Each structure stands twice: as structure tokens, then as C-alpha cells.
Image (cartoon, rainbow, N blue to C red; front, side, top):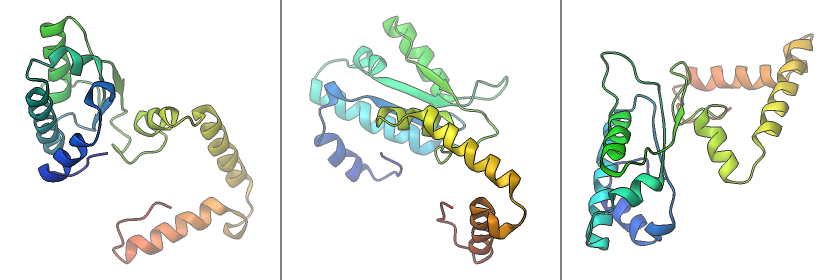
Length: 169
């Protein structure tokens, strides 16, 4: 996972993996996040220099995109990149649509979280069914003291009011 703009850490990470056997999952809620554009540029420049040839088709076949659906009048860099890759290679990289109403890379039950869970061997159906069971139990709760979800929500509100932004409750 590369989620910052530090080219040194990105280049170090790239040097430690086999690029020919790596699946690149490119995630941007808007499809135009600056970090994603810059990291893609770093990746493609590095890989091209290592291969000493055009890696466009290999990259197209080894990448998956997760972003919002295209919106009329709004640029989405990732959709544009997929179209460009298809025009150059004849292969259109796969795309998973992220609902614009769901937070980007941090949403567990979005395509971001579920695709990643499946890649790790987790059963996304079991995760969703488990979440549904917890939610159903929450709806049946008589008071906050009976509900784990309510307690987590209270904890989240408590932490937010103290400006603690790194919370995963």
C-alpha cells in the first residue's frame, strides 16, 4: 500500500517486489487524487526504466481501478487512463465502481474493502452477513448498554469531540 507522496519510499517498495507478478490496485474516490497521479507516474517511470521497453500493455493487464463512476462535466483521471490504455493496447483494465456516497479507501464494505478482503482470502459474504447480524441485534436492543454498536458509536463521538481523527471504531 502506497498512500503518500514520498518517492523514496515508493521507489524502495518497487525495488523490493517483482513487478511482473504484481497486481496494482489503483484506488481514488474522485479518480483524480493528486497522490494517485504522482505515484502512478513514479511507478510507470521506474518500471519502464527497469524493463528498458514500453510496459503499457503489461501494466494494463496487471492493474485494477476502483473509483467513482464517471460524471458528466467532471474529469476522472483514472477513467481517462483506462480509456488511454485500451486505445494503446486493446485491453481495458477492470474497474470496480465505488458509490460516491461512500468514503473512499477507508470504507470496509465498499468495493475498496471487499475486493481487498477477497484478495486476502477472506469471505466477503461472511463479513457482510456478520455485519448484518450485528446490525439486526442492534435494532433489537432495548438500551445503549445492550448494544456493542451503540457503545462504539458513543466512543467514536467521544473521540471525535476530542479531535482524535485516527479512529476505527
